[in-house]
Length: 249
Length: 279
Image 1 (cartoon, helix red, strand yellow):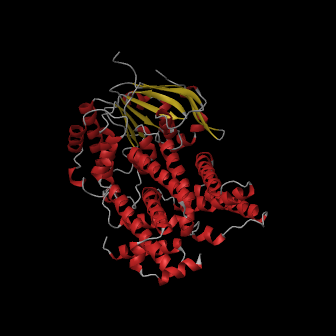
Image 2 (cartoon, helix red, strand yellow; image 1 turned 30 degrees about the horizontal axis):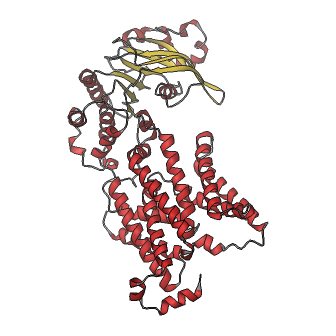
């Protein structure tokens, strides 16, 4: 079966110390599909991501991974202590040494380094690379595993509009070249990648989902992330009315 | 310290001591070098993970091991090892389940076990415990059973790092990323902590509870200045640790100074030397 999903999450609930963070979230990630998860601060995006990656066990509900699923993960940021002497190429190779990887090492490594144009920093201590370079290095490490699913946690955070466009362009290119599914998390509610197949709009529960075009006209989305501050402030009120019904597929 | 032996050495020509070394000197050097070998990989990770307070906490808890050992009349080395392992697992579990920061937890565990150890010791005034040896180490106390145990530990450390060096390195770089990449980070980290606890229990006789952490971190910190890769840092750390033990033990014998302090002083000289080097 070629259309076997990569990850299937059913009826996830999660609470931290009695406070509900996620409420009845179900979703499916399919091969070759680009999914963007958006939501305001405190919507539970990070929690959901951790649960989907099996870093966190949900209070209720179940996460299913395709057997031997290879995930490439690009963390939001990474801090490497100055006391640890390590160059960029060694950092990349370390990603290959992990037990769960696929593909041919040296060709993948070369190919990935070229795709992300990071040849010039390979011999640089990793603490000395710039923010943009670090992002491409992290992306490279994720790709080295020949992932079936690429997970990007806030990849455009702290990147200017130009950089965002460039990064989205790169991700598009990667998706075509590597043929992997992509799950992207973003707190930017107004700009998502154009080629996104599906946008999931999270605020403790999935408020709405669909293509970027469909989402932007969805009343639930407009209520949640509309222009006016009044509406944002009123959100708690709207939360209980019919506009916020779940639209699972 | 054993004064008669020490005086005998001062009057013995150095050349004879080297050509015909007494058994305890061989024991001491062998034990010390093995400890340095064990300390190097544990120490570099301690520096990379900023865990030096963890080592200090484990060393404090060793007094509880001594107190408990005397109280229950069991082998002291064994009780120190068991208590250290218990404390290490305790810290590991508490970290995962507590809202308090790990340095707070370490402070609580270290000092509560130290306090409990002191109480247990005070309840047995008949017990003869050389507190100086506990605090500063006593090279003459390293005997054959100790050496055998240290050798086993050295083998265990070598096997662990041969297998899990990359895993622990990845865990240190970013635990979440490592876990997603399929590394059992919790397990690897726990093994590391258990080996650390064993090392501290064993090194206690050599350098004493107060100075153990420095044996772990000073050679690693010195090595940082020369290393371009994690493996190089391990290599330099082995060299500086080994040299510190050799010169430290010899200096301790000749000038009748506490061995642990002597080793740490030599290690510090190397560190100061490394500061002169341009980055």
